[in-house]
Amino acid sequence: MKLEAIELRRIALPLVTPFRTSFGTQTERDILLVRVIGPGAEGWGECVALMSPTYSAEYVDGAQHVMQSFLLPRLFEAGEVGAHEVAEVLRPYQGHRMAKAAIEMAVLDAELRTAGRSWGTEMGALADRVASGVSVGIFDSVPELLDHVQGYVDEGYVRIKLKIEPGWDIEPVAAVRERFGDIPLQVDANTAYRLGDAKHLAKLDPFDLLLIEQPLPEEHVRAHAELRKVVRTPICLDESIVSAQSCVDAILMGAVDIVNVKWGRVGGYLEARRIADICRAHDIPVWCGGMIETGLGRAGNAALAAHPAFQLPGDISASARFYAQDIVTEPIVLEDGYVRVPTGPGLGVTLDHAFLDEVTIKSTTLRP
Ligand code: NPG
Image (tube, rainbow, N blue to C red):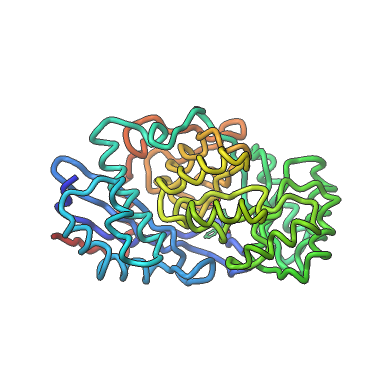
């Protein structure tokens, strides 16, 4: 499409409850939305970078800066750009995958809306609904954790993921197993351990977890291969998989049993789909991660997770898990433990413009 203008809009959304992980506690999201405008076409994307560079090197102010100073001027210069060309056009600039992903998402949304095609069609979706798991943060005490897990189980989530870190691992997992029986359960360490903790992590084996997600740091891919020799629980990589290439490398290195696919982390939904295809060819199960997206990203994630490579429930919880009100008019809801895959053109959701204006902090529009 020909890009006539791109709006960068920052919104602030409070979380319904603080979300504590080994990389910090989130109480609100400061989200950068990207709106592309072309002749008779409009599309929206969202940038999943957090306020500080704690999950990965990216952060929201940095994402906006790199977009304004480098990515968007280059995109405008390119003239006519299709969604499948965005990554190639932006390739001269290293990294900044979440920023690039948001731009590609907006262009793809505009393109699919114009063509009357759904996100699911683009992602290779075969299912019309996907199993919904919930990610549960770290708490000060086990009874507090159990209360929260009980709430999510009552809501119907089909899988529970517990955030862990040194000092908060075996005991909470044991307590959740004891109280909730054989509910599908997995843990996420967000890089909080080292290979020297292998024997300690093996103490999780008796709890029959679906997986341990990213126990070791992002660049410690080979160390995950070593860890797999000591720990029986399947090892899942999140932070380490930043592209289709790094996914292939991790598989061939024997470092991974299961892959968490996050579109923002890997530079976009199109790369996420390539990773799903690669994993399917290698018989590596995948599941869809979440980055506390608004209804835009949640809709895209539901469609991505309907691709046949996705064999485990994703972190695709209802909008209400994090937000009292979503910015789309059809918030993602839980129906018997599942989330419906949108079928309308593009992302298949409509923005609630009145609410969007209410939560907007600032907006800048750039033109070629
Ligand atoms: O359901 O959207 C969700 C959140 C799932 O735990 C979740 N995401 O490490 O996977 C993660 C974590 C995360 C959130 C990572 C925000 C980065 C940003």
